[in-house]
Image 1 (cartoon, rainbow, N blue to C red):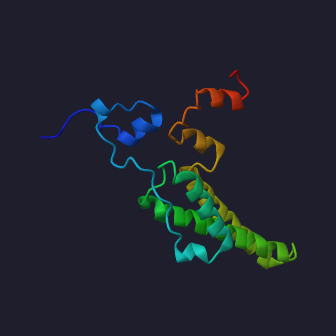
Image 2 (image 1 turned 60 degrees about the vertical axis):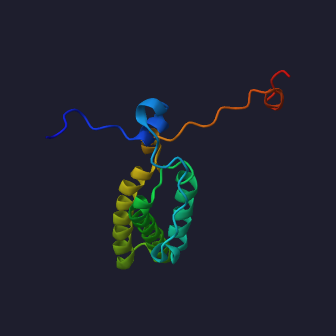
Image 3 (image 1 turned 45 degrees about the horizontal axis):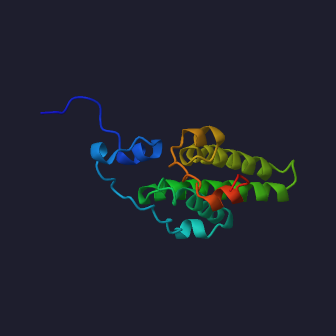
Amino acid sequence: MKLRGRPRIPVESHIARGTYRKDRHGLPASAAPSRPLRIPPSVATNPDAAALWRMVNKNLAPDGVLKAADAAKLEGLCRWYGLFRRCMAAVERLDALDPDAYRLLIQASMAWRAFDSAAGEFGLSPASRARLKLPAAPAPETNGKGRFFRGGEE
């Protein structure tokens, strides 16, 4: 017999939205933040791709948004970005009227489109960042020292 109704919202989504209740939703699958993913060799050989990998890992792994299942998608994102940067560097070294420059520009354009479509899934554009559900920041201290150092009254 199939269950009717809409599927359950994952506990992690409730936590990110601030609607989590332990008595109603149970314990989350992993309460600890996820660890940064190890950089694959295909990304490590390109400095631009490796820099993007480190930046995305640094920003998304501590919040628990980036999981091990995202590694292949993140690898593709970084490789497309590295290819785009490599093509653009080669274009800048060539004369504008060189036929190879035109071919490289087409390759760079294709790489940028692929990168841009994948970047939206990691919140790397303002519109996609607004859709990305991140956990709320911790509340500031309310003791006397916290108020003093923020410029409030003691």
